[in-house]
Length: 198
Image (cartoon, rainbow, N blue to C red; front, side, top):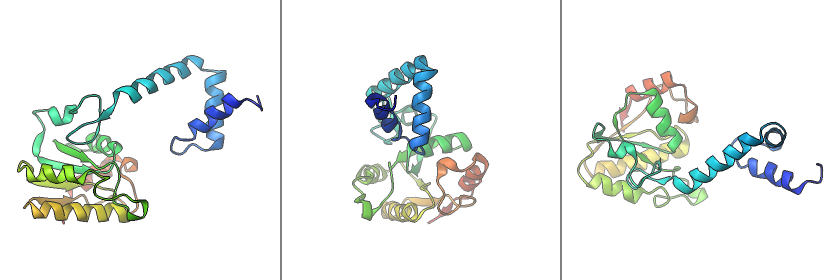
């Protein structure tokens, strides 16, 4: 086993997951090979299907199996409210913790000049076109309360103001430096209810 190239490659591949280091990847690989080969096969099939079948919604950029996701297509959602988040995990957190019934726009990150992530990489031209469309009356900025998240929120708020759109920011209870997907649902619901104008 010590010289198994395939096992080493599997452990290295598992380390691409967040929070998985050398020991965790070793434990996962050995578990799948020793105790749960059927689970490993299901994981392989599910992962391949997701890679082949999941893309991005053309309107909100969230992960979706169709060109337009179910949230964007729903006639029950309030199309005048647009919540801007950094990741698909943030959409799930907001949906779980709040009664928000508007639509979303997923940035897939935040502005970070040091990492060469600017407005184009975040799809802000798509967001700006959506704001110019005249349907949105309020944009809720739910970017993470980090330095980059705040800078991103201020940049987007300026885009909204140029179109005469009210820009609000989620506020209370979300700690500075925290990330939405790790905030408990009660705190996130309170933050959403207490959003403020930027």
